[in-house]
Length: 317
Image (spheres, helix red, strand yellow):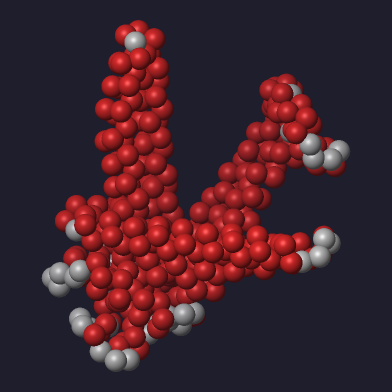
């Protein structure tokens, strides 16, 4: 096992991203397709429940409130169409997860293979980024097809864990309210603060685990459950390094978000007051945001792949 510092992981992650730039447009395509499918999954229930009339009548807050107020009666009076629309929504949603799993499988398969191909110390050699080059559309498609079900079930495992944390948070809030009503504000404060700290730490561990588990899922002999366990083991053993990688991602994402917001605001002051110009402006900044987000995601996943492979070894399979 080659113990690797967080800085070395970031350096190798950068080199791997540079060597496999073909992953960036595929990651952006993944984000766009999954977003479109998620939005599409909401369409059948909305149409069945009168959402089309809401849009045709002109969007307004009053119309939205009126539509929401009548949802209960609409559902009760149209049970069969609502049930069919729900099934259609579920199918489209599962398709979105499969698309995500296929792209994620291809992405992590390439990154893990790149990390294993580049020998230790590659980050210290001039031109060492070339040792990470493993990308091809054929290999990406092959890894995607091989890993799609691993990541399909990993997604559901992740959502289950997130739901458990959310439920615990809601129960904690209810306990604080009940404590306040029964024993006073001091009890509510004690329950809320006493539970908030471990819950916040649990959410932090969840974020670290999610990032570390993804490359672990792509390792030889792994899967959704085994990869999740390996990812948690890496986080437990290298908490500081895993945390630093996450902090770097958050800082870079924040800086990029502020820069884009400022740039969009300044550009908005310079363009003419026309619908076409505003549409072009927002579309341009949206595409830039998608491209930068894809690059950042690939870089962070490549960095976590370096950490995971150094800790547990293994090859993609």
